[in-house]
Image (cartoon, rainbow, N blue to C red; front, side, top):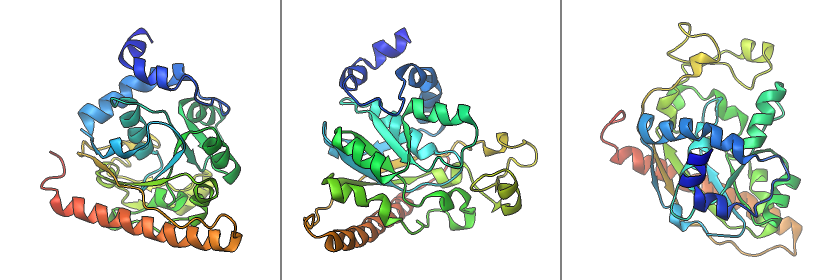
Length: 272
């Protein structure tokens, strides 16, 4: 903890007044920081671009692509934001109802995850928090390697609270994550038996049992934050607001897919 305090002095200072209503615990985040640092700096060598576009204070929503049962893109984004020159704490709003282990559920709450609900999201915006969602949802956890980097349809309702609250929306596109934990196939029978959203079979299976088979390859990652796109204020008309949310969600989805395609074309090697 002393090393964490020394290294992340600005982060601690900037997050002192953040809302801890859902159980965030700085000590738990400090405990996993060395592991996140290793993944970000050494194993995946994540390159983050455009984080300076985010506001230094006030509510904002980050929207990104995802894959896999373990939310590694969320963790890497969280670490990137806490270790930058002007750090901000990130709260990740995600589907957590499927998690039956109370210890796992409590751990995620302590490091900055919050169960998905429109009410929770609007509450965080009202407190001026920086929030991230991954609108591909649980179906993306079983995305096969053959569909890597094909962004699945975003759930527009995940973005609706941002429109209702007037929070700006920042798309972020990530590559590297789909090769890091490649899913060869999803065994639906086992996923239902174990009450999981998916049971991914990876190259580490059957040599490593679940969940060790969710191990990762040392693929270089790249995360690019895009500029927010304005939308017409229709807060006085509920139907118009919903229609705006639907259309803008499709636009954000297209932005992320286009940026992923651009980064893949520019990438020379995957593992270097």
